[in-house]
Structures are given as C-alpha cells and as structure tokens.
Amino acid sequence: MRGSYILILNLKKDVKIKIGKLGSIYFPRGYYSYVGSAMGRSVNLENRLKRHFKEKKKKRWHIDYLLSNRFTSIEGVMIIPSRKKLECSISRSIETQADFTVKNFGSSDCNCKGHLHYFKNRKKLLSMLNSL
Figure 1 (cartoon, rainbow, N blue to C red):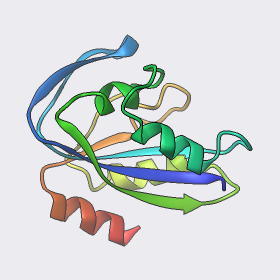
Figure 2: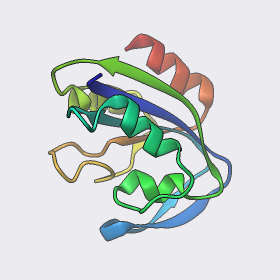
Figure 3: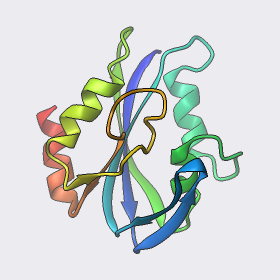
Figure 4: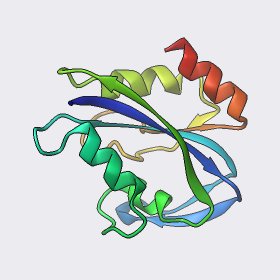
C-alpha cells in the first residue's frame, strides 16, 4: 500500500538532540506529529512503518534521531492510503493548528517549513487529527 502517514509521538522529558545535519535541537516535552510518506513498491507504508518501530536501525532520516531517544515513544499512527503524494499538504494543514513546527525537520526534499509539529497537550493533537 502506498500513501502518507502521521506518527503520534510522546516526548516525556525536555531534551536536546543532535539531528543529523540540522545540528542540536531543543525539544520540549509534549506531543508531536510527524508526517511522512511511502510511495514506492518496495518502500511501501507497511515497510516504512515497521522501520519506524524498530529499536535498532541506522540513523538515516531526521525522525530516526528523535525515535532513538529513550524519552520518545510512538503512541499511534494514522495511515492515509493514496497513489498521490499528500505528505506536504497534510503537513501544512497540521502546521496551522500546531503550537509550533520544528523548522526543516523531515522536509529536506520539499519546501515545507517542517514535517514535525509540536502540541503542548495530547487532547489538542487528537482533536486536530480528527478534523483532518
């Protein structure tokens, strides 16, 4: 299956993490949504999401650095099956309701501000996802 997805993350503690070429970024504790996509035949949604849930993996993308932090957990996933790449439009929609967007995170191959969005509380994040 091809399409986009949203990871729902909980960061249990304020942390500063070195994120590849982006350098060190301060992440306040709270909830995050990360928007990604998998549009290939071998790199499909199932394989991409399995990779995100693996504990041991080579850090290849920005999200790998955040997911490898011991205070980060994946609380849920929203899957958006599609043959069209909707990742950027989904991310821009979430950005309008987020408390802030982590600049350049997960968006090195597009013109988006970022694909990682911060929400102070879980209720606000879930309400936003229900409105998509």
